[in-house]
View 1: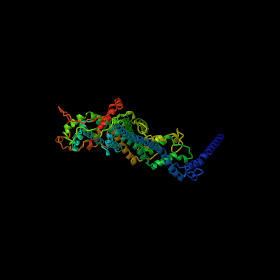
View 2: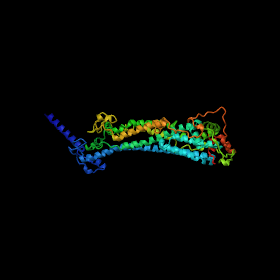
View 3: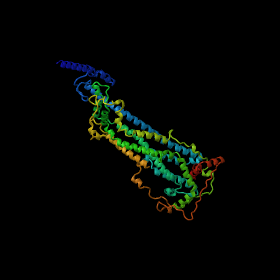
View 4: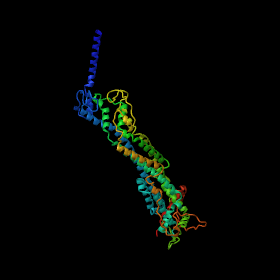
Length: 560
């Protein structure tokens, strides 16, 4: 009997001790008042002591330091708190690729300007007014390249533009080396149609067309890809949280407040389930996002290699000069083939066989251009450095959407181990962590997600990424799919030659052959005066650079 009395007394003391020890934590809401006030809310909303049986909508009912009004305000706060880390991560990603887009775009634009400036400087120094009189041809060439970079085939048919450029150049040179003939516009149309067959400029036009097409398509498509990334991120970041997501975030972040445990943080797996439910639609973007990033990385490799924009544009002045030299060296053979295919042109009335340099317009001296003086960079950098940097950023951006919950549920935002908030109490979280994506949320224990209603904005961005990926893959193969239509592929050239000579009435694909006894046309000889020092420097230069001044003499039109 004494033992029973002693046991009962001991038990009563233990219960009393536990009650006294627990009272400050359960009935005193001072910590909650301080934490609630730090959020910018009115401290008077918080009761001094806990309330039993508060009719809360989200947090566990029973003893609580929260009222219904507090729960509503904290629910709105939880929405902001949930959005803050996601917005920060999205903003950082947007900023990163906005900067890279600006860097690449500025680089490509300046490289075009530098190439035009280099050609102009080289040709002016080489031949003075002779080039100036024909500078419009080259100015239009670079203007068209800029338009193509900015707007693609919607603004410029690159193949047609290049064909017109070489045809115009051939016309000017043909008139000069055959000044004794009168070339009508219809005759020149015949010549233009067969420029590719004649190959007066050697293999330069074909190679340059291939190089320019690949480099420009790759450059403008890659730049557009960089521009698209922050656009997609921005649109996806505007997607609002669902009511069930706000409810779940309130329960995870602020229900510990209501139980008086303001410092208690959620369990990591609990946080993951909440965030994967809230970001279910965003996670579905991940597959197409990763495909897009992979396509960007592949095209970046092309930019570093065979489709290098810098290696094509930087020496373009030398390439054009080399083409002109080829025409000059083979002018007799080219003229003979033209006369055979398009007919013998009419002699020019009143033509004098000898003309002075003053009459032909050629008064300059040949001065070779030093390749060391040509600009080699744009925007203070190089394509290799830009590409190496952006590849690192692209790799970091991969799987951004699927790893977003893991990124948010990390560090100081969660509590490790079992000493964490599991949604109802300070204890271990036992539920299974569900997967990413909308379809997996059917079994999410913490967020109610309607898997039958995918977000419209995100679905539209998935479609945008798919389309851009197809453009990137096409550019990787050197194709501009915005131009590669069935009509264009079938070849819709103008019918009829427009030539009024009998020899032009045959099929447009004239076969330019060399007869057994070819008639050598009379070719106007252009004499270039060189001083001793200039001649010495010319021998030290490359063939293309050293001869470009002589070639430019052929550009001057015959003014009558």
